[in-house]
Image (cartoon, rainbow, N blue to C red; front, side):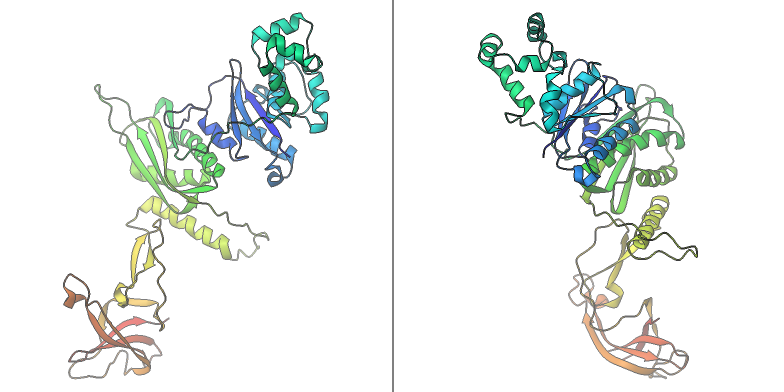
Length: 459
């Protein structure tokens, strides 16, 4: 069943992150969308806040009360004091807003952090709700108060036709939506397609350490944005703005961050950015930060370990080991750059020396390449080693070689547009073994003088 949760905040400055030219409340709305896809902004002269439809997602959070408690805890984690948050829940959005306003104005008190009115309690709770809790015009509330109408219950007991003739039928429709006898569709916020957060620093920051607090606040907004859409970022860009010098503003310094797999954990992203900033060596003091999400992908959460780690410190297995390896590679890449950390990727080429290439660890996977029909050695030499000559036509490496398997003929590269003769190969490959017990991958040129070469070692 639908259930609406409203929270109102005192009109204090919200966190200074903002999305582009939008208001500063955008990161807060993106954070709210992690709990539900139906989020409605609330604004007024005395309070601001949001309506969240929690009935459809409460099972995901262990029930209605745990979900509402999680929302309130998240608001406090973002810096909003508990005494400046007024929250209430009800089966209709108008009723939830009215109960939250009543708590914000001190008209009602509840022992719990938030007030939750169930459907069977709605009429009784509205019956004693002060009329001032409604966000109605003063020109309407004052005449009603002069008539001795003090609660919503008093208002509901008035003759409908007489009330409509004197005050207007539109207010009857508002009451019907509040009690749930008429539908009340809401204009919910769409999930933003792009995120760019900005924060101005109160004082110029000189070292990387002084940027960690503002950066963490921006990354918290990024995490909320990504969680609301079940996405992870694979590319982010941090711009650091510098103070004016001699009347001119220097261009911002750009620090990109590329990831091997979608990530949205703010703490994890902060550690990677810290490595990048330390390596970048900012040229000047910083007066502002701008964080932009460049590329996102669907996020697939990995399951945790069922059993605690063993006392012997055995290595991790399965998804946890892969995740630890990826985190290590990303940390090394943030510290050393693409030239120092890369990964191998299969290429669609039959020539062994061109069957793979090195790419950055954050590169998208290439097209699927079918494995070769025959086995390949783990160690391929960068340059084949000649193991026969005109005086000793039989291959030798650590002694005479005995052929175990083959031949496998590879003729490829003739289609290369540049220097085709230099790139073309015409070979017969064999698996061989020498007197030392080494298993080798050798080939024989098809063209005269049919020389033998060593190309790899099997493990």
